Amino acid sequence: MSAWSDLSLPHNLRERLVAEARAAPDIEICGFLARGDDGLIRHIITNRSERLADRFDMDPAEQIAAFRCMRERRARLIAIYHSHPIGEAVPSRHDIRGHSYPQAAALIIAPRALSGPGLRAWRLDDAGAKELELTWHTGAWHDARDAD
Ligand SMILES: [Zn+2]
Image 1 (cartoon, rainbow, N blue to C red):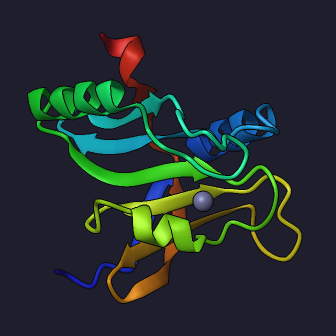
Image 2: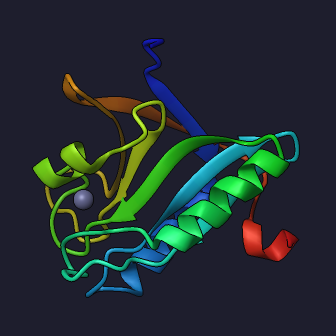
Image 3: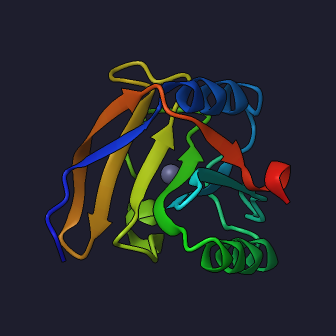
């Protein structure tokens, strides 16, 4: 595996993710970010966890549909995002254990973080969690649903 150490995203996507996380104070929001020939695509996935406030379990059918969409667009999963309605933008043990795509970053949005930035990215694999450098650019992105 390459030792990638950074993630670059459009800054208006940051604003959107923080606004959506803030608007869902009792639910961890979640989704995929994929990069393909036609730019960055965001796939919103419904959280089906029994513990919506502090866990996320992505809807299986929506995940399959998102991966089908990525294949059709030759897009690659670059990040899985979710929010922490309470607490810091740091992966929980459950997050590290449950991260099924080590080649994709874990992007955590914590609008009420007190001791650090409210949005941080991590590489999660068998070695644990390593924080990635997040940089922001002015590029565009769109929601998969908008384009379908
Ligand atoms: Zn988490």
